[in-house]
Image (cartoon, rainbow, N blue to C red):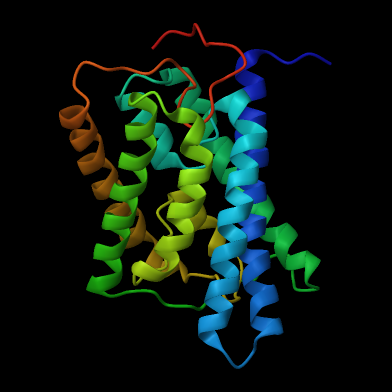
Length: 241
């Protein structure tokens, strides 16, 4: 069976998003069970596994889709001319659907209901600021590396950044609307209550907009080829932008 390039890219984003959410939620559940009396150790375990898993997923699926797994990265890439409108139209639903599947898979792996709506409220000014800053840093990191011609380093840099951001940001750096939505589906260590999601998404978008502006100022006159966001594609897209 041979898929079109756009279908392959959508599948890569779906699988990568599912894998990322499974890693985030699964490692959170495992950490809470392995270290039930030490929240700091739980967070460290969750952070290290998430960072390592993110590197592996970007390396695996990046050559097909660019390895976004994040709507704000996709939208920023569109703004900077890296992907087409058609790609955005298939990437975003693929990411959200993959994230939901990943959450259900993580729950089931640990003998929990496939869906359990989180009751973990995350609502405070400091958390909202944290999400804006974490997203800003992530987007600047990705597109700064790409525009500096160092895109091959991005999987490792992004994994390291997210690992660190678990601790320097008060919100533990969700920095991803797909992650927000998926983590609503697991009432576990990594969960977030539905009522907390809208402000997280809004602040992530604010951070991404500011980051795109910063990238334009820092790297004027430089545009990346389609798909060069994290790992260069095996084939360059020629879809209309």
